[in-house]
Amino acid sequence: MKGRKPELLIPASSLEVLRTAVIFGADAVYIGGEAYGLRAKAKNFTVGEMAEGIAFAHAHGVKVYVTANILAHNGDLEGAEKYFAELRDMRPERADALIVSDPGLFMLVREVWPEAEIHISTQANNTNYQTYLFWWKLGAKRVVSARELSLEEIALIRRHIPAEMEIESFVHGAMCVSYSGRCLLSNYFTGRDANKGACTHPCRWKYAVMEESRPGEYLPVYENERGTFIFNSRDLCMIEYIPELVAAGIDSFKIEGRMKTALYVAAVARTYRKAIDDYFENEEKYRSNLEWYRAEIAKCTHRHFSTGFYFGKPDENTQIYDNSTYVDAYTYLGCVQEVASTMLARIEQRNKFRVGDVIEIVKPDGSNVQAVVEAMYDADLQPVESCPHPRQRIWLRLSKVPDPFDLLRACSDTDEN
Image 1: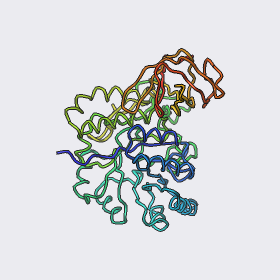
Image 2: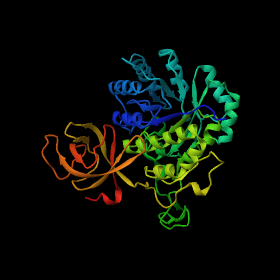
Image 3: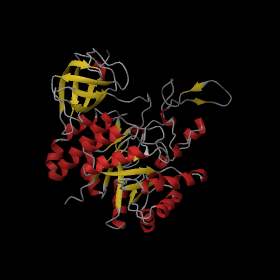
Image 4: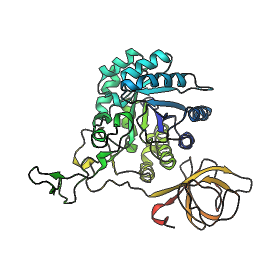
């Protein structure tokens, strides 16, 4: 017998990405404001944009959670209190939950916005059922499991907590070299605090060893004289293990990636949406479609995949030693914002392409439609041959007419124009 159907929780860095996540299959979206979240380099949302995004999501039956999961210092508290009051007073609609990790911020939320639903971030190192019960008794509705837990450990937590308490777990995206993301490397090397949202990702840098008596002579850390990316972990991908995740009692499948593009979000959201829906419709249907899920998820930007800690502790095969680059098969061109009565499609372009290119229309239903760029016009409807300027608003005539919210992409190895 299958358990409860899990929520599909998708990240969003901007209004465009939020809309994409909603249209491409999210049950809930998590976003950050301009402060107090752990993705300071993401575009993030002003309070006005947040209100607009929440209204759009709610109109489509999708929830929105706001992150405030920094490890706060004294100087953060007064501003955080005002921020939570702003979120409480947001109109016409408010966020469905706040995600926090710091006990001080948790208490501030309880004081400022007592009726708010609170989720406890993975940053709080949630590794056992007593920790879950601790937060539950304080009033938290959901706890995000530490990424270091196995499915067996999560199942044990589920058996020891109330049925109405929710477990959220990461199922896809980048992994951190430090325990539950509590990294000090960035602060040590650059003065930018990862625990306050300013991580420079030093775990992706190249490293070598230098012996004390031989300064300047760099020795290989691994069998490669050029050095090694020894901290550079593979990305998590659990698309092939939906039954096991459900059986463990996870209520929300979380996708990592509040720094990612709309194309990444669309591809991951629709693939996990289909996998979850297929499994709950018929397990045989899910298993028969595994090859399609694998193929589609591999089209997303990634660093090779692993299953993280879910089936035991990772070994040397879950690290990438020779480089820190992404596998990036496709280039994001833009999202269709409007289709006119003339069948021209308006987009805000993200990468250069030109008339005559063969591109792909990415649709929420899982289909990819190949199309030729037959004509291109600037914002004043003057014909152009290409769109070289970033974020240029253009109109396109394609051989296949797209729909609003469809995304356009091109194969990266053929997009050298």
